[in-house]
Image 1 (cartoon, helix red, strand yellow):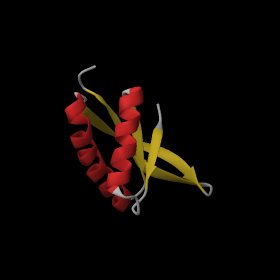
Image 2 (cartoon, one colour):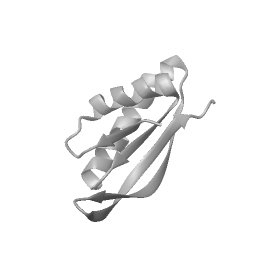
Image 3 (cartoon, helix red, strand yellow):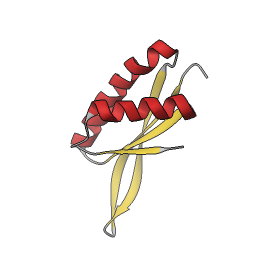
Image 4 (cartoon, one colour):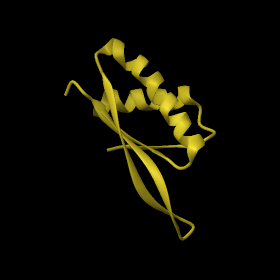
Length: 88
Protein backbone atom coordinates (compact mmCIF):
# COMPACT_ATOMS: atom_id res chain seq x y z
CA UNK A 1 0.00 0.00 0.00
CA UNK A 2 1.36 3.42 -0.92
CA UNK A 3 2.16 5.73 2.01
CA UNK A 4 1.67 9.49 1.64
CA UNK A 5 3.45 11.55 4.28
CA UNK A 6 1.77 14.85 5.09
CA UNK A 7 3.38 17.78 6.92
CA UNK A 8 1.90 20.90 8.48
CA UNK A 9 3.06 22.82 5.39
CA UNK A 10 1.39 20.47 2.88
CA UNK A 11 -1.31 21.94 0.66
CA UNK A 12 -4.60 20.09 1.29
CA UNK A 13 -5.55 20.36 -2.40
CA UNK A 14 -2.22 18.90 -3.55
CA UNK A 15 -2.49 16.05 -1.04
CA UNK A 16 -6.12 15.47 -2.08
CA UNK A 17 -4.99 15.10 -5.69
CA UNK A 18 -2.38 12.55 -4.64
CA UNK A 19 -4.94 10.65 -2.56
CA UNK A 20 -7.41 10.60 -5.47
CA UNK A 21 -4.73 9.40 -7.89
CA UNK A 22 -3.60 6.54 -5.66
CA UNK A 23 -7.21 5.58 -4.87
CA UNK A 24 -8.09 5.41 -8.57
CA UNK A 25 -5.06 3.21 -9.29
CA UNK A 26 -4.77 1.03 -6.18
CA UNK A 27 -8.10 1.33 -4.36
CA UNK A 28 -6.40 2.11 -1.04
CA UNK A 29 -3.80 4.46 0.43
CA UNK A 30 -2.15 5.15 3.78
CA UNK A 31 -1.64 8.73 4.94
CA UNK A 32 0.92 9.33 7.69
CA UNK A 33 1.13 12.46 9.87
CA UNK A 34 3.34 13.65 12.71
CA UNK A 35 1.89 16.46 14.81
CA UNK A 36 -1.36 18.37 15.05
CA UNK A 37 -0.70 20.65 12.07
CA UNK A 38 0.04 17.73 9.75
CA UNK A 39 -3.03 15.84 10.97
CA UNK A 40 -5.18 18.91 10.33
CA UNK A 41 -3.89 19.21 6.74
CA UNK A 42 -4.43 15.49 6.15
CA UNK A 43 -8.04 15.55 7.38
CA UNK A 44 -8.80 18.53 5.12
CA UNK A 45 -7.16 16.70 2.20
CA UNK A 46 -9.25 13.58 2.82
CA UNK A 47 -12.44 15.67 2.76
CA UNK A 48 -11.42 17.32 -0.53
CA UNK A 49 -10.42 13.94 -2.02
CA UNK A 50 -13.90 12.58 -1.26
CA UNK A 51 -15.28 15.31 -3.47
CA UNK A 52 -12.85 14.43 -6.25
CA UNK A 53 -13.66 10.71 -6.08
CA UNK A 54 -17.44 10.71 -5.54
CA UNK A 55 -18.30 11.54 -9.19
CA UNK A 56 -16.40 8.44 -10.38
CA UNK A 57 -18.17 6.18 -7.87
CA UNK A 58 -15.42 5.86 -5.26
CA UNK A 59 -16.67 6.35 -1.70
CA UNK A 60 -13.53 6.84 0.39
CA UNK A 61 -13.57 5.74 4.03
CA UNK A 62 -10.67 6.16 6.46
CA UNK A 63 -9.65 4.35 9.60
CA UNK A 64 -7.26 6.25 11.92
CA UNK A 65 -4.52 4.36 13.78
CA UNK A 66 -1.50 5.23 15.91
CA UNK A 67 1.92 4.12 14.75
CA UNK A 68 5.57 4.49 15.74
CA UNK A 69 8.46 5.80 13.65
CA UNK A 70 12.09 6.46 14.49
CA UNK A 71 13.38 9.95 13.74
CA UNK A 72 17.00 10.82 14.59
CA UNK A 73 17.20 7.84 16.94
CA UNK A 74 14.07 8.89 18.81
CA UNK A 75 10.76 6.99 18.68
CA UNK A 76 7.81 9.23 17.73
CA UNK A 77 4.09 8.57 17.54
CA UNK A 78 2.38 9.17 14.20
CA UNK A 79 -1.24 9.04 13.14
CA UNK A 80 -1.93 6.81 10.15
CA UNK A 81 -5.12 7.02 8.11
CA UNK A 82 -5.86 3.85 6.16
CA UNK A 83 -8.20 4.89 3.33
CA UNK A 84 -10.15 2.56 1.06
CA UNK A 85 -13.25 2.40 -1.11
CA UNK A 86 -16.15 1.21 1.07
CA UNK A 87 -17.88 -0.19 -2.02
CA UNK A 88 -15.22 -2.89 -2.47
